[in-house]
Figure 1 (cartoon, rainbow, N blue to C red):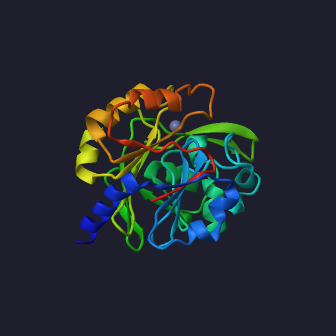
Figure 2 (figure 1 turned 120 degrees about the vertical axis):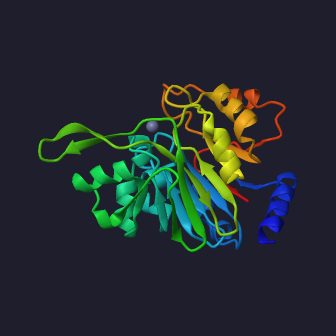
Length: 285
Ligand SMILES: [Zn+2]
């Protein structure tokens, strides 16, 4: 019953319009935006970094490349604390543009970093984070870290390597860090977001969509390391078929040349709602 009425309201909201708040970060933090009961709010930091405010007001942070991100708005880039208190921290894989500030956020909030089991293990063994500040899980595994919020790890076609500066030698070291993952994040009202992480094409995107039924997909389009715009459009139109999509992981690295315009062109004629964002912008549902 709850889910049915929710699905209706999502359908209506597609026509009536999601509230797009063009953000200056100041607006992103204003009580008027963050205090709305029952809304889901996404703030994009650039690349794959999002802060999701759940309908019950819980703050979920994913892939926070904030202080090092070239597109991070200055208010966050210069002051990590400006992202506010975080309740749940998720990382898809160990590459620096995803792991980023996550260890610092885990420590500052005294919360666990939820990540691929074999990424969290070297974080522990190298002394980057203590075991009590990590939660190791793996694909198809799901967790309920907060009441009413369920996170399921799903496949991503990508790699994961941890580059770490050893303070004893002052030299960079490379450490295996498990396999990259994506996340299906189900919020208190049933709304499901699929953060795909970094991924190339794989045909089980169809299975993941059919089995988990995501409402909103955060999809990488930059190419080189991930799907390019035409790949992402193929996956969305042919396999995933979500209601809404937010393109991500483009414009932050000269090697990821895929653009929003190319993605929009490749999606032309599709009924899937594209929600383009700029770093620092918030979107409310
Ligand atoms: Zn990566």
